[in-house]
Image 1: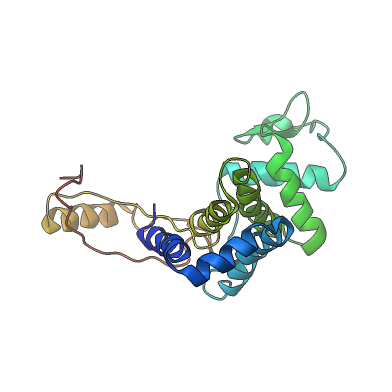
Image 2: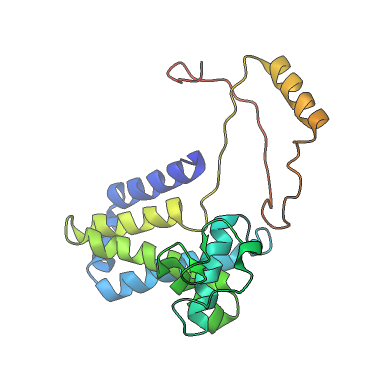
Length: 221
């Protein structure tokens, strides 16, 4: 879990609980289901569009991406599957079925949103933004059945922080010391496996490296 997102979300929840004024406004807003759904769906879209200059539309990469795009392309042509190519043995791909029809191995759910984004906005990526918005809004809707409206709204806001456009990837590599890290990095560069070759443009927009010392409770010690 990204620490920045976690602490920001925790701060937001604490503000809603601790501040009488914010709590009053939040409680009044939380009971207005339609307005909350619209707010929670629109906020991740606005945030993602705001981040476009720094994090542009990513380039599809990997077998999963292309298989889901195949679903989107198939549905965009109002088909559920495609005819078998006469030379399909020369066009085999991972996660793609060639017989009894040319189609993806994945269910059509994600591909349906990709096709919707392509149809409405000209890019399948827009379908992912729509799906993200729907997910954040429906988190609030689902929580309404289990918790009070105020906590349901807080849960929807937490979903935006954790699964919305603010989400980032974090990878941790453990080394005995800085010297070992330098040796491993130098060997990877010498073997040609670092930086990763053939990385598509847009896949890695920004990277930050830092050296950290494990805490006393960390299993990386």
